[in-house]
Image (cartoon, rainbow, N blue to C red):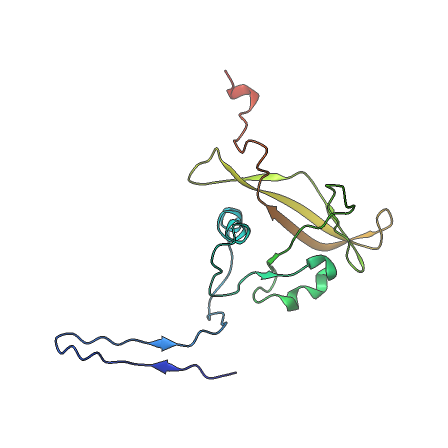
Length: 175
């Protein structure tokens, strides 16, 4: 590991001294740091920031990789952080060129959705859907013949711009 450089500077102003610490930037996860974001933080901050191409964070917490090029047991070593949970940005590929069906096949199996998209709402505006979460389970083998494993994935995405992103009221609350 390279040593970091720390520099101190004393300004010539006699009435006030300022010490400036200059640290060369390096990718380090601080001791005690735990990356445990809420669904709202993952979608509202990290994913939205990535999609809107805002200035990247100085620490590379979530790597951009094509997770479908890897089997799930290979993913932990590709992540910067995490012991039991890992986070990645990934473009969603299509099964067929003119289809909306996603391709979730890997070298040894496939990811299968276990339910419908669950909406993620903003704490600041509980009626605003800011994202969607889908749970998937990994199956070893091919579709129809695969065997279920203990690997689970949560896929987060921003809501479609064509649909209204407002929470629907249950029938009992409508007038």
